[in-house]
Amino acid sequence: MPDSPSPEATSHAAVTPVVAHVSSGRLKLAALVAGGVAAVVVVGGLVSRVSADQRQKSWTEQQAIPTIGLAKVDGGGTRDLALPGDVQAFYTAPIHARVSGYLKRWYVDIGAPVKAGQVLADIDTPDLDQQVLQARADLATAQANQGLAATTAQRWQGLVAADAVSKQEAEEKFGDLAAKNALVNSSRANLNRLLALESFKKITAPFAGVVTTRSTDIGALISATGGPTDPALFTVADQRRLRIYVRVPQNYSSLVHKGQTADLRVPEFVGQAFTAVVANSAQSVGAQSGAELVELQMDNPEGRIKSGDYAQVTFRLASPITTTRIPVTAIQYRHNGPVVAVVGPDNHVKIRSVVVSRDLGSTVEIGSGLGASERVVDNPPESLADGDLVRIAGASAQKAGA
Image 1 (cartoon, rainbow, N blue to C red):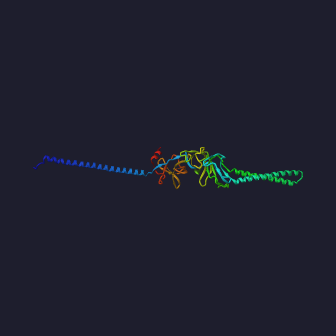
Image 2: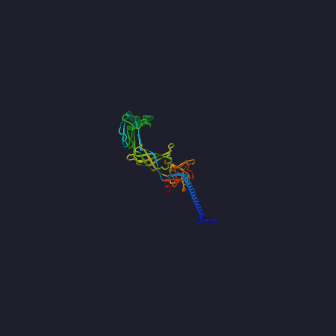
């Protein structure tokens, strides 16, 4: 009989298939776990990449939206208009010589206050003095002839009454008396004319004021030709009241009216303003200047402001309620005229045409097309188009939110 297997061999043969089955199951589980982990890693990577792509796309789109600032928009109110002014004394008189001669003496110099009628200088007029003497002699001769003619006419009147002479001869005597009377009147008028001229030997001040110029000296030859080229010997100015002439541009002329006040400033009084009042206007625009001449007046009792001063006159001009002011940087000039970019509630841009009523230098006044409560883009880029989405940056965004 063959030998039967031992118990140990039988037990070993039975355990081996069980161990092989268990090892195979573990390998499959490990493979499944590894596959799951790999799938999770792949899916996580894909999700992360998609999310990154979306973030990149969103960031790119955000960067493509232009960032803009808002301009300051004001409506109505008042506006300062500063213009150069020409200051003149209320009365200014260049004093010319009325008679020819030599300057004998002058009594006042520049800066001297004078009263009305005060003598400024004396002129020596030897020629005029001799003409006065001759006129007196001519008058005396004419009066003597008049007296003789009057006596003769009276005598001939008595002779005519006695029929001693003819009426023709008597009328000749009466005619001679009338001629002598006319000659006396002529001589007297000539003497009075020369005496009037002789009064101009004393140069006097026409009104109270200050002597601002003296252009003659003792011994200077004075020639009174009566022409406009005659040099003025003195100039007297009454500076207790001043006239200020300002040329107001046509755009603003309708806002300046009689009785309106304005501030006047001069370089010698820095930071100090004087008040002047509009007194008159030319009611005409100059063809060359395009401005209207306006006269203002002001009291100057202490003489602080001088005639001829350069002054800056500031008007407070009232703007209509419908007028809107914006910086010039907010204006664009396109083929259809001036436009502004207005930001709507949804942050989309609307390109709007406007009408510029006044140019104030750094700002402009918009007559129509824009409201004071609207958001206007400052320094809009040329590429900005109607309907574009924009982002309001920094302080402009805070101001817009407020």
